[in-house]
Length: 273
Figure 1 (tube, rainbow, N blue to C red):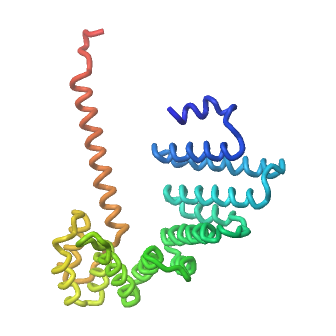
Figure 2 (figure 1 turned 180 degrees about the vertical axis):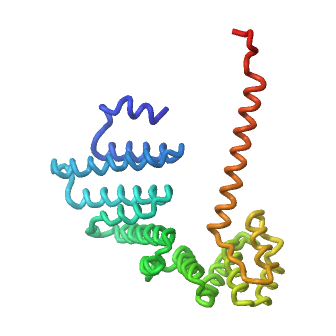
Figure 3 (figure 1 turned 30 degrees about the horizontal axis):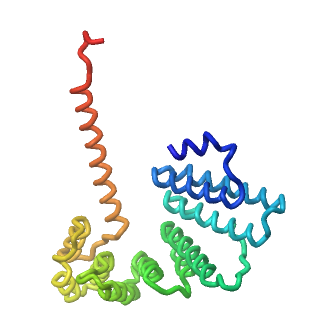
């Protein structure tokens, strides 16, 4: 309904900063109902508006660059959600150099870091591993470590991946929640141990974590890894694909069931009018 109101009263939509707020809210509504393509189009319209305002000299160069970059970053995020990784990289190439304003250094640093992670994730999805390592060069923290580990896993560089994964597991166990741990790191460590033929490590993982993995799909994957006599390839994307297939099958069956019930109980007899 709110999206409908926007288009019904588009002619009286406020301009300036309030226009940006309206577009941001409209974009969030589109995303909430699964209309990512429409959200991207709304933001592209904002890009045109920003360029128009710059030509009218109602926006300074600094304000235009800042608002344009924020909008392009959001478009790139939506392209990533939609699985359009090449468009993520293409969109981010349009970012403009920013003049750092005193007192806002931390905000600009956060923006640049987010952009690097967007690029790295898109490159990882396209199996462009060297680009991923370049994107996260100099970055620290869980996200950067995870991406580096994913690259090493994809390239079968098991010995280089192992210390990174062990670090992720150690960091997750330091959380306040008792017994909390990084399940994906456990799966990856198990795969690495399998390829390195380190049965002692596999046994230790099984004893400590085997009965504590709540997610049924990941628990099944873990059990396959630790019980296999030969190295196996079970990665997070494959597990996610299995979960997605299961969800789609469930939705399909629910739809068929609903159609059958609607046909059985609400269909009129031939002589009814």
